[in-house]
Amino acid sequence: MQQTNCGICTSQPFKYTCPRCNLNYCSLSCYKHESHLQCTESFYKDNIQQEMQSKGGSAASKYYLGEETKVPDTSEADMKRKMMQLLQRFESGDHGAFDEEVGEEDDDDVLEERLKGLDLDSISVEDLIALLPESHLKAFETQIQQSGLLDSETFTDALTTPWWIHTNSGSLIQDIDEPKSSQSQTIPSHLSSIVPFSTLTKAQPHSSLPFNIAELLCIYSIVWRHFNGEFSLEEEQDARTLLTQLSLILKDQEGGGSFGYDSVESAVIGVWDRVIRMNSIFLPDTISSSEAPAKKVLEVLFTDLQHLISSRNTVVAALSHLHDIFATKPQVKEFKKMYQRISKKILFYTCFAADSIVSPDTLWKMLGRQAMVCAANRNTMEQQDSVLGHNAEYVREEVLKTMQREERKDLVTEI
Image (cartoon, rainbow, N blue to C red; front, side, top):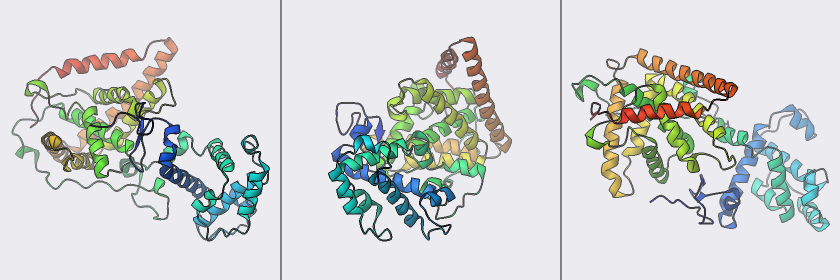
């Protein structure tokens, strides 16, 4: 059973998962608890390093540090100089917010003594941070936060850009010296078990199949982003749990029938609604109202779908990766048969997508345009609702009612 409470305080439902140790936690204070200190220190180190490296080549930073125009040989050396500059700022008294938190002369003397004779070419970032007295360390953390290092945009930049964004915007090849946050991802390999769709069934494909694939692509993109594209064995189990919770297509329907969508928009809205219902997992606790993050999730879903569904290659690649996630042997034996059924169902959809006879290239281009038009129409509707004072939630409820009516219809069984 998946843990539902915070692994630190054990009293509150968890809202986040540490990407380093997979610990579930509910708030920043729990994340920074002393029992989680190792990951916390690594987090600060990585984010400081990323911030330093991102500005390593700017002329302004060299001028501010008093350096000449010669560029340092390595970004690591430049990063250390910049970090040293931050340390020296509050050590010399030019630290703004530090004045409120660091006022003890003893700590200033300790810091000054520790900074004497430092060799920036040999000391590590961890050792630099370790030199700070406790009061200065707290002040340093405050300075990082006030500088915007830990704001939402910085976290967004730190995330790996999904492979389907690069696939549709340019080359997948980049300099290996670039930081991981900006490196592109490799396109997932296509399944070797793909066969012509006609070998799976003699019946004509149901009209809902492309829209059902739209749902699968949406749940794939949202879970891929949730795990930042990194799936260890333990994370794959969590991913499978989330995927089955987000999808109606992967669930077994009563009476042996099969659920089917009737449009791109209904597929996206269906996933969006279930994501919002699971906001304790997918949405930040810094925003009390669900309106702002809900709108952002919907924008991401439509944008990702446009990239994923516009090309047969990306559709098959995404479905193949989705299949691989469920094909891995589950840690809980009770899930084995269910995951086998799901894997078989995903293979069915993958074969449909890969077969140019039943799903020509024009189909995927048309679906991509539909996703783009739906996103544009919804933005227009939201603007009109804002002007007229209407409740935009009404639109969502009407779409859900349509989906519920469709859910009761028995469609052609896929498998």
